[in-house]
Image (cartoon, rainbow, N blue to C red):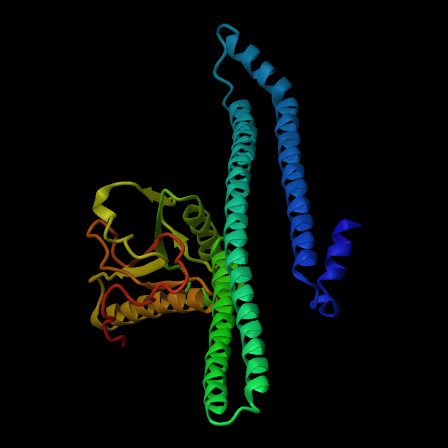
Length: 343
């Protein structure tokens, strides 16, 4: 019922509500999000317990068989249990990661609230300054009307008062513009706090035009970057591309320059095998696949660019995708090197 009421409040007919109503809706949504997060943790914990209960008898039976003398190792039963154990371990790790992500989200939300309070206070001060300027303008105008009957000197004083009033009006407009700029900055900060989103089906549809491309994915030790790398890996596999290795989290200093720019970088290692026509066609496909991946990510609002030349250890005819930090607002976008002409 509470979620339905919040959706009704967000309809176009309710968009003229004041700040207190909007804050109430925001707090209600945050409470709802906390409840869903708690339910997600509970549900995952139930799955973990259920998997343990489901495989507990098989594990005990496997242990008993292993202890029998003169009996060969039961590989078939071990293979059957290995999948269940791995699933249970994976779900338990998912529960742990979800809990840690929920804690970070709570801290981020509290920090955003502090930013909102600070910006709201500045906007309130700006509004008060505008009101004071308007009141000063009214006082000056009243004084000008009272001295209008006085000749010469009174007229000059009235003219000076009018000039002051115009300056006050300009100051009020400037203060109003500053308040609008602060509101826009707050909106940009809130948008930047959300993780990157990739439409995997749409990206896969574009990449299927260049099937069976080999690609390696690297990222850094950052939760959001690793999450984006996982989404990208799934989309590439849906597009019939072959991810040759697991996603590698780079921690060594040798790749600091490669990850200096935020966003996603795409580059390719060309090969030299094959005849002239065959080699030209292969390079042409690799170039177009590299550009199609970069362009589609940018079209979805995920900043991507051509990266630095790949390392010599990268196999030939292979693309290298490096997922860095999410770009901050107003960060310049461009390629890390001058793009070479494509056929």
